[in-house]
Length: 184
Image: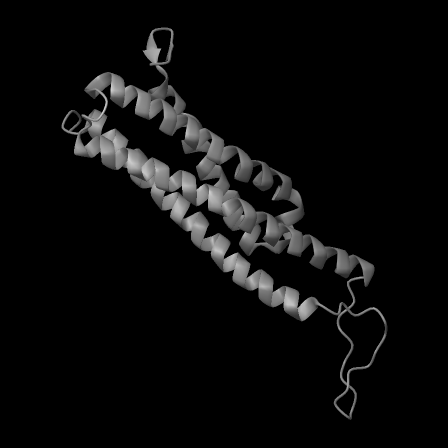
């Protein structure tokens, strides 16, 4: 079992995913719902999307070693097994978020580039015969991009909410094992 200063690493390692995943959920929600801040937090969210699964994996890995040391291989209690399951579900949720997040960010970057290319001009108004006046500065894929961003944004939102829930359940189940019945 890996230790630091003769203490098991797992109780220390769990703090990294608690902070990183919580930051990912909060900044990710801001990124999805507040388009003007996307340029400000985009790189931070991208880094968190990549770093958070690594932190969760470190916690799961050290937790399994800690449980094997404490209870013996294959002799874990149901509470430990449930705690481990939450950790693995959180990890796979974050791994699933990676391609979804980067696809959404790429579409948003394309949207912003089209707006800059067009001088942030609104789409031309329709003429009397129902045809759109052509000015040459219209983004031809804006409608499709908007629909795709909405769908992918919903998937990203669902994964962020699920990650927040699994972070809570994992942390709560671990805290119950350590502090349940001690603090009243």
